[in-house]
Length: 123
Image (cartoon, rainbow, N blue to C red; front, top):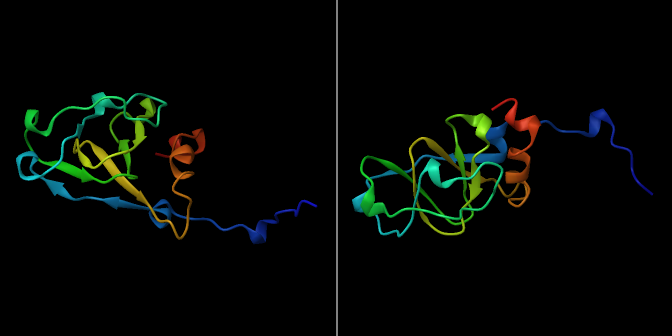
């Protein structure tokens, strides 16, 4: 039997309650990682990082991310550029690094929610 979900049984969450904005800024030459992910490496409507650059080829401050983090292109949000990192690395400061709060949301679900019209229309 399917239980009917009533309005009083639903809970509303702010985005900062389900994901942490990781803002660890680093200089590319000062980190021991092999991957740099720029917005140009994120494909619209794809959750996979299929290409990347080298940290040696970029300057200026970048953001550090870890395996499992979500990299979200905050410039031109309508392009829907976001991906789940399968490795540690650094990314453009024009992105956001988001880490799911596992006590509130399934990490596997969050990137799909972030691709939804419901999320994108408010981003």
